[in-house]
Amino acid sequence: MGETPVAASDAIDEPPRARRFSINAALDAFFFVFAGVASVWLAWLVLTESFGFGWWGIAFFVVFWLVLAYLVLPRLHRILTTIYVPDYFIGRTRTSDGLLGDPVNLALDGPETSVHAAMLAAGWTRADDVTLASSWRIVTSTLTRKSYDEAPVSPLFLFGRQQDFAYQQEVEGNPAKRHHVRFWRTPDGWLLPGGRRVDWLAAGTFDRAVGFSLFTLQVTHKIDADTDVERDHIIATVVGTSPRARVDVLADFSTGYHSRNGGGDSIRTDGDLPVIDVSDVAAAPVAPSPGGGS
Amino acid sequence: MSVEKRAAFEPPAELVRPVEAPPDMKRPAATVSGAVLVVLRVIAGIVWLVALAAQWDQVLADDGGIDPESAEGIASYGVLAIILVFGAVVLLAQLLLAFAVYRGSNAARLTLMIFATLSIVISWFDYAAGQEITIRTTLVTLALDILVLLALSSRAARAYARRPRR
Image (cartoon, rainbow over all chains, first blue to last red; front, top):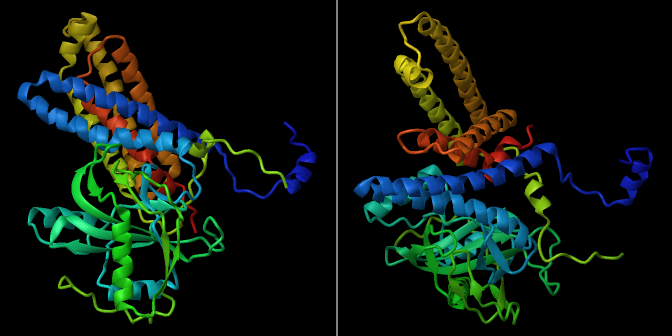
């Protein structure tokens, strides 16, 4: 309708916007949802099959759990959260399934090189990206009980993007426990609620154990509920080693966030959002890795 | 400038929003596993065709009540040949499409998803009509179809296939 010359003037009045609909995309959406429904059926078939094989049925039950936890529930969450989770900044990251993830509890100012310099100086190790090679190394290091300080962290999303990089500290060579913090560069000209401009947002949490996610039943790290402890630990290590870093606290930025992260763990916080200014920290020429000794 | 009241949920059209991906996106695991699963599906199809050919006399007797020695039975080998040739062509096409998906073709991805969807729907009608789906019958091929569909419809595979080309 209305594909007349009038459309041209309409187009001028409307704000320019990206193409939001195409046949191709509609097909994709259909297949996305259809595959989700079909996977539910598959899980059901595998479950009923597991009753027909005696003790071998246990193997089928494991397959059923794998299908449910790693295929069905993520896909269903992805479909539902696309609709019910708002896609603007609410102080929370999102998991790859769209669920609410770790809280944003730290902000930084300064160029990327200074952030790296400050974190490396503070004894943090940059996490590898998730690749086939690093995934394989997780498996082997778990089996051989060797430590893997640069183990990748799972992707979390802010501004619709995966973290730009992440840092972590192992605890006593225990792979189940670790400090970790993810960083996102804020979009150009983007302001925090309240109007403050920061260059980086970060979400720091402490992995205390390995367990099952409440929402997807996947094996995952459980985080410590008191996210303030980890936030203050990050600040203490950075300020302790980089005296030129300045800390400014946005008090009560998110007071009253007492919720769950993407794995279903409870979160408590006093709501302060510290902003660390690392722009004066000298960007060291890629410092040699502090190594596992720290 | 008036601002419209915002709903408490995102519009379902978000599911239809094209995903943006950088042109230098690396091939995601979903695309690789999708292509590999299609190859496995082709292998399952070959096994099925070979089994059909090997048991053709049995199939004739059970389903059609035809004696393989009769003139009708001998003529049926023509039907078997047509089925085998047709099946081989479809499987070969799927193999080529799997390679195209691996290379990042979006048309091949959509075609394979249509194949998988049709196959799943047909299995569903059979299931609803009372045919059992177990590991000994068609569970393996059905599972492969569903896994192919899951892998190829994932956001990563979609983004990779639809990434802007330089």
